Amino acid sequence: MVFQDDVMTEGASNSRPPLLKGHNYGFWKLRMKAYIRSIDERAWMTVEEGYLAPNKIEDGVTVSKPRSEWSTNEFELAKWHHRAVNAIFGGVDSRQFSYIQNLETAKEAWEALQVTNEGTKAVKKSRLQLLTSQFEVLQMGEEDKFVDFQDKLLDIANQCQALGTPISGERLNWKILRSLPKRFKAKVTAIEESKDVDVMSIDELLGSLQTFEACMKPKAKNKGLALKVVKEASSSDDDEEMALLVRKFRKFMRKGAKSSGKYSRDKEVKKSFTPPHERSGQAKSNRKVQCFKCKKLGHYASDCPSGDSKKDKKGKAMAGYME
Image (cartoon, rainbow, N blue to C red; front, side, top):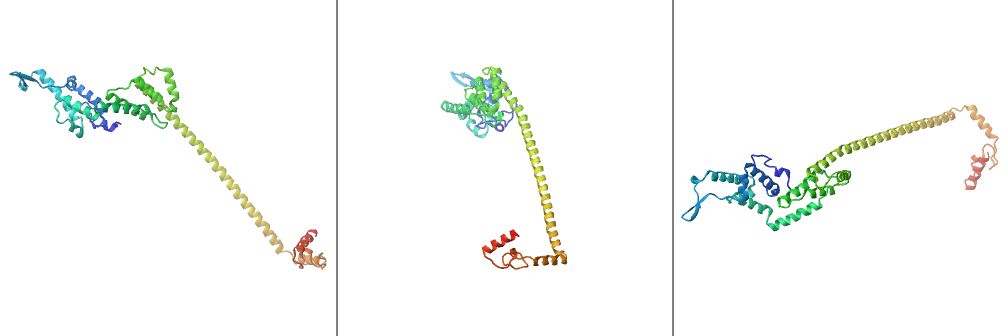
């Protein structure tokens, strides 16, 4: 894959050619062709058709013509050829330059780089098959950004074009529409119903989908904020209810503790401060009481000191109940 930082090392400048690093040959080839043609159409002509230095025939033998004998047109053609050579030599890194440094003409250098980076016909065919396979299986993921998917697809298309087998606009359009995730379904349906996809320009399709995705993001963001506010409000309500419940429980416990303490203290105080005459009166009244168990006076059957058996205890309990 061609990376933006690599292919734009020299920038899109009219004064400096793009830089070839091997893996970006498809991009470089197109850019270099445009760059050389911007110098002059005759410069590109020397790359396509080749260049032969002026010569003449002496005594039936072809020999190089001395520059002093060159015509104006021959000087002009040589000038454009050398500019093409300079552009190619200046547009490659040191490794690529080693493949062409001993070549004389722009055509030879161009073809050498082409074979080195694209390979022979068999190699080109193999690379095209690989690119075609990548093109067919490429799909945009549910979480992917459209611009990333677009870059991958167009990179494959550009490499195929550089290898001499361009992908048609119609095929690109349908590939894009069939590779989008579910969130684009409504937009895809609208495009298919309102546009002729076969003749629709790739730029129009890409722009339409980019705009659609850009409009989707604020809605998703607002939805997330609303959900967050609802969750925070719900959490706040729960916290308030819990705090109220805790306060009520603590209040109840304090009230219960006060009541229990007051009852115990009142009972103890009442017992501690029972007047002596009341206590003696109670003792006198007990003297007339007869125990149903031992038939003695002065105590109840429940307080009878005689007997520890279960039967006695049962009887004691019954006697106490009867009393």
